[in-house]
Amino acid sequence: MKRNILLGTVCALFLMPAALLAQDYEYHPAISDNFYASLGAMRSNDSFRIEADAPQGEDGDDVDFGDTLGVSRHSTFFNGQLRWKFGKTRKWSVWGQYFSNNAKGNSTLEEDVEWDGEIFREGTYAEAGVKVSVARLFFGYSLFKNDQNDFGVGAGLHNLDLSAYIEGEIITGEGGTGKHRADVGASQILPNVGTWYNFSPARRWLLHARLDWIGASIGDYDGDMWNATAGVNFQAFRHIGFDLYWQYFNLNVDVDKTDWRGGVDLTYSGPVFAITGTW
Image (cartoon, rainbow, N blue to C red; front, side, top):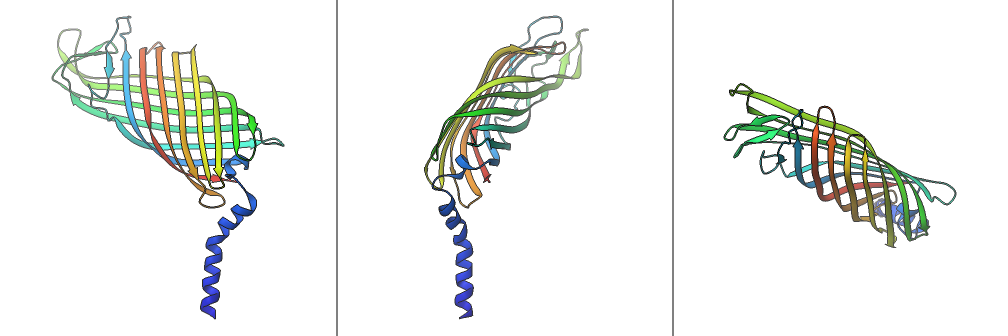
């Protein structure tokens, strides 16, 4: 008798989340709940092309940090998001996202590399790195929203921190050689516009996509940026789900600063696996 009671209790505990979900929600709770959080890891294919001109104005090389300097084309890094819906109909929302990556590598140069006014010599050993962090704050409004659908638009800000370096043997002004490290970096807050669409075909499933874009000349940057995601979420328990989506982030800009004149074309693309919470 005691064994039957214990077995019944255990079964009830395991079935309780599903029962609560069935009672409270006919479709995925990410559409109707106030809060949505995602903690994930992105496995990214990376591409870094960076130019750093000489301070006196002479153009430097457009350097592929992967092919030329051995900076890894694959990386895994944290990717987190948070959304808050508010208002009587929950049509207004505030979104936040953050991800950061620090990629490094080394290589024996197969040709001279002119970068930030220095010439790194062919046949010498060089180290290099690219560090990028992106923080996004976004305010949105749902133009169309019901139990199954949520389509909206909005505007926000991307804070971009970007830095890169090359360290190796250079040709000095006197014609000799010496070891040198050349660093460049820029930080800028950029406005953006965006849109999203979430669709729940069944209680535990959510299909979601979003797109952010900016094309403008602001501060140190002149160019465009794209940030896009598309994926599927499975709500395993009342407040916990699992998300698998693809993210594409591209920044293609010219940079005009006192300590860095040049340009950058970098791309992160790959799958993100995340644990999500709704409440």
